[in-house]
Length: 164
Image (spheres, one colour):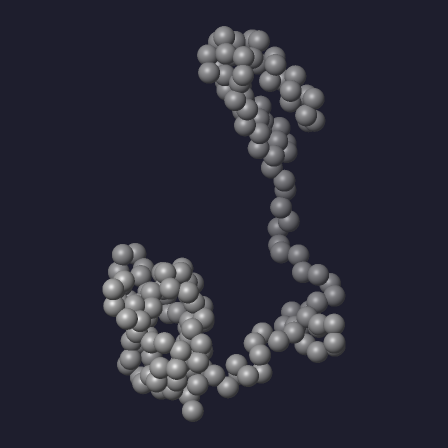
């Protein structure tokens, strides 16, 4: 069904005085609603359904588990070589990340802070509950990877810690 046919259908429904007309075909659903019998600008909702493939398509040239190759011929790196010596502390839950216990209080940790197992690093709010996130390692905070009051996902990196 092309746009001309849809426009003529809208005009026909507006002139007919019908309050609502639904048309369902194989690949398209159209609903035309008029406010009342004399209303000349009907509301139209058009939903086109496109059949989706049954399974995800994988490009033939990229086998599973092989990283893409960059211009220089080296495999794509997920982090820099320098970051590999650091321990990544990840979010154990989905929620909102807060660096401070309260807006008027200082942050739990800053870059350069020394931490020990059991130290509170941040708070993650999930479903109106504030969860203290404690360190399981000792070391020095090298980088804070999330902004204050930002949403975080499960297993999202939050901090980089130098264990030495």
